[in-house]
Image (cartoon, rainbow, N blue to C red; front, side, top):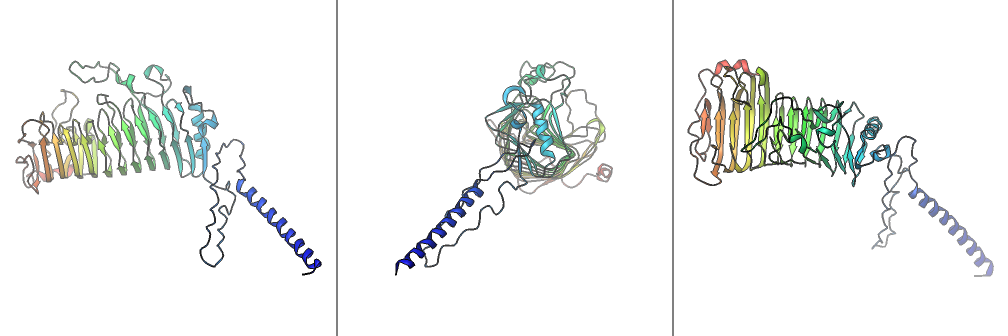
Length: 476
């Protein structure tokens, strides 16, 4: 090759190297390009993932070139994160961060698939607040830090409601989640003199005694609550009222055993509910299902110490109560006053039907299986003839141990409106200690034993009561 050809080859190589350098520079600029922040919208940019590495080919074919991991700019996304600290939340455990949370909610509510972030390593205090919709779909409130109300009734603002703390109202397709804690600061509320104090010298003083429910969803649909630790509520931990389409999963709910009125999850006038894989220990019902509920599936819940899993109370003040299609499966109930319970007041109307309790392990539980149609919080309740009609109740594979202070099975049904179609199958309950209680209690209860129960349920009447036609007035 002569000198002219060599120079020409070197000149071509230099040009190719220059253009390759320009391409690499542009590619690096594209990779590091950040989202331009909009005034008033404190979005958080997430660092983009590194581009996939080229894997050397083992064949004779040249290696394939991966497509651009960011075919569009990484900032061009509708998923927006609104950090409450960007709106002025301090998160030092004492400052009032209410205004910041309200501003973050207002901004995120108008953006589809927005996330309100409560960051970790901070303690945020907010007062009683209603987070209202409607909002754009896909709204997420992600609590990774600690969120709590003022500490006790003396610190509660006088202008705020004492019946509720966090209220989510008229929302659709909203999620409350995170790996943080919602702390209720309930200790001082429990010690109010008008609260029922349990114990050998416990007493309570008459008078109004309002305490806030911790979290309330009202008139909302397609709601998810997951992953959180919720603890020490002044009263109910979570309430769902007038909702449809609720998924609750992987929660930890806890308060001390003697904390009064601290139900874990309470639902009423709510349909299509799933409660899954959660742990609840508290001073009242783990889960309570109130009037107006249907199509509720409870699966994989560990409960106790507590007052068990309850349907009711129903029919208070001569009201109508309709509850249907409730399933409780694969549960553990331990160290509790009750296991699975249906409780109604005298004088009510309506019905409880299509209830299934299946695969439930009891550990030292009083009243493992109980239907109480004489529920009353005092000794002043008068006998009444009408009652909520209880029918089509199935107990299957209920096993474990009970506290011998009460019979493990207790069916106390109305004098005038019998319980019907009770089915018992594979029920085996033994004393935690002491002698076997072989005398379950039944009153006006009709049903069958598909298999021999331990203890035997000899008091359950076969067939149907003669006056069953009169129960049509109680149907829903």
